[in-house]
Structures are given as structure tokens and as C-alpha cells.
Length: 221
Image (cartoon, rainbow, N blue to C red):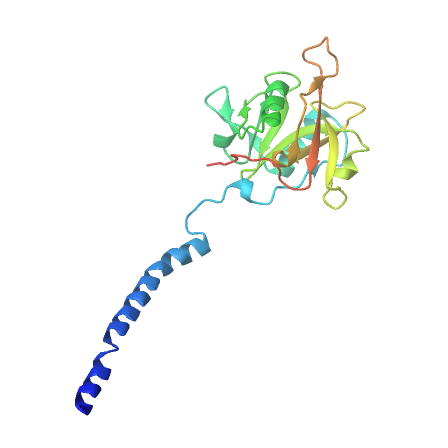
């Protein structure tokens, strides 16, 4: 009888050892996938998931052509090169700029459209300029009044600022700025300053948030 008991106790744990080994092998098979997910693997991080850029301001006032040149240099963008008359923001190359009519811009921002149709050259004299930065995020360019300029800098800007962004400079709005598209909340269309003149400067009222509030398909090659 002692021999039978001894043999029984020696052979009994075998099923548990086998089950344990199977469990270890199963866990090991999951490790590579877990590590790949933790390290990001090859999955793309879209710009909308990154921290939205801060507003960019050119401190001086001056000639419109020179102000635009300075802002483009500061944002590291160059003229959009396209074989077609219109190109979607999502497929436009990073580090480039294009233009959009006030009407299409207003409709896109009000409806929170994830994409914008851009043109290489201004289609109208009051077109708004759009910058696509190196990380794929978008910036809307316009002109603001001098009293508003200090509120746009990150260190001074409150949580929410109501801004009037003009398409062209004037004595009232002499300073050029670029504000991140994903931080804009819009509830009305832009208005022409001269209702009788289709090409007159346009004023676009909007809220500039401290964090990204819009969804976006901002991507780039």
C-alpha cells in the first residue's frame, strides 16, 4: 500500500504541470503584440492627436506682402505646388500654403468639415491663407486689431478668446497672425466689410480655444 500511495503522489501533479506550461506559452505568444502596441509599432499618429500648435504672431505691422512673407518663413511653409486647380488639405504636402474663399472656409468650419479645398493662388482678393505645418497641422492666417494681439500669445491667452480675423490688413487690423484650425469654434459665416463690393476685405468672428475642440483629418505624405 505505501508503494501505491507514493506512485500516485508522484504522478498526480503531471496534468497541472502540463496546464501550467500551456498557460506560460500562451502568455509568451501575447508579449510581442503587447510590446508593439506599447511602443507604437508602425501605426501612424495623426496630427489631430498631437498637441495643437500655438498661435503665431508677427509683432510688427507693415506691407501685406512683407508680412505674409515673414509669417510663411516663421511657419516654414512655401507655395503649394499642385497639378490641379484645387487640392484637399489632407493630401497637400506638409510645409506648404494655399488659399480658400471665405465662403468655403466658413462652411467648412461651421460644419466642422475635416478637410479643406485649397488653391495654389488666391481665387479672390479676400481669400484666406492656410498653412500646413511640417507636422501636418493646419493654421488659418488673417489680420487682427492691435488690442487683440497680446491675448493670442500662450502665456497671456485666457481659456477662450473671441477674435475677429480679417482677410486683409487695414489701419484697424494691421497685425498678421496664424491660429490653429483645430482650436477654432465658429458659429457664423464671415461678412464682407463692404456689402456692395464682392472683393472687399472679410471679417470672420470665431472663438479661439485653449485646447483642440474640432475633429480633423489633417494628415500629410
